[in-house]
Length: 88
Image (cartoon, rainbow, N blue to C red; front, side, top):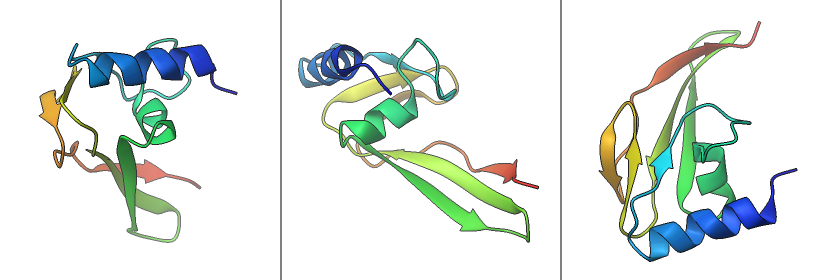
């Protein structure tokens, strides 16, 4: 279960335009895109590409901006690159 304090801090940092750093790895002690989904500031997009594979990416939908180590500064409507995931 994710810490309510962590999620509250993330929302506050975004709302105050502090441009927090967000990583892609879920379960990280740092902020991740799953945390953004939990506070309503991102959505995970997914498309089936085969029996056991999916293409996935994240779209930022929140106010102000965030910083990511692979896409740089993102604002509402920006999304990460599609990545193929294997669920076999």
